[in-house]
Length: 167
Ligand SMILES: CC(C)(COP(=O)(O)OP(=O)(O)OC[C@H]1O[C@@H](n2cnc3c(N)ncnc32)[C@H](O)[C@@H]1OP(=O)(O)O)[C@@H](O)C(=O)NCCC(=O)NCCS
Image (cartoon, rainbow, N blue to C red; front, top):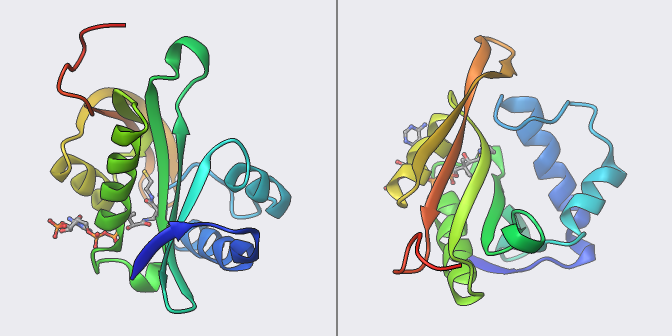
């Protein structure tokens, strides 16, 4: 498995993964009838996108960039998706680690996840293991198909040794 920049020819596989993830799990705040054109603009827009590939198979992906522009642009954010059939094999960890290394070398001071569904144990545990802390809880922010209203977390970790100091 290798992680490499996404190219437009990967769009079909990426769209397939997105749809599979949305249909099979209550993990992301997107509806099952999410529009392909909007997906494309999100994943080939301002942020950089990377794919986990094994030969010609696309197994996962992430996009990453500044969480906010201007005065917020020293904090990165990212979104990760692993094809459901390939989950639990270390691909998610590899993607998050890759994005952290990239964000660090790009000079970001921290990484923030704005909306981690609290019942998404795989994501919450993975992020905790990689040094993220829950810094905020959005009460009942996500409507889970089985559990009803569940919390969403804001998760955060510093990337540079100086932490919160400086501008
Ligand atoms: C969250 C996601 C990216 C994780 O990717 P993955 O390939 O399944 O995860 P990995 O196999 O790399 O596991 C990473 C770690 O999380 C832990 N983990 C994974 N699933 C877990 C679960 N259900 N319960 C507890 N821990 C779990 C593993 O133990 C592993 O720890 P280790 O690396 O120390 O062994 C993936 O499940 C996914 O795409 N989910 C749907 C989309 C999503 O939720 N994206 C994130 C939105 S915030």
